[in-house]
Length: 139
Image 1 (cartoon, rainbow, N blue to C red):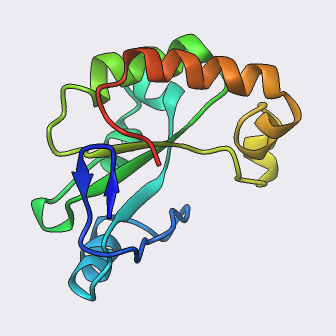
Image 2: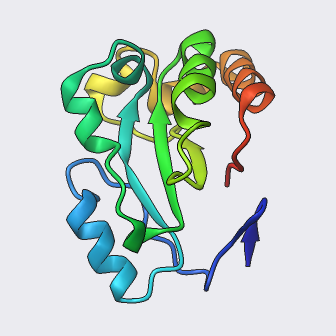
């Protein structure tokens, strides 16, 4: 199976789960046979403004590759900027996933996560801007 140029061993994917899919858990799942692991969702603004806590969420171990990093946000320019400036240069990140499904109130109240499904025009703009600058595939 392939996603873009990333070859996966199988179609067993670890779903991204906030507070669960940390580095240690992803490595465990990879050792148990997951073909793809996905990070916890990471705030695009956290990356953009260099939040120290966000840096921890972006740690990757070679044992867990291939890995997808899931980002969330609702500002197309910030989303594109962090992909181009921060995620593209990282060779340890294989795939970029954009969260459009999180229903948590603290995420939705900012227009992020599943709130984007109520604003298809904004969701489309985010996708267009990110795809325009990304050199990594997206599932």
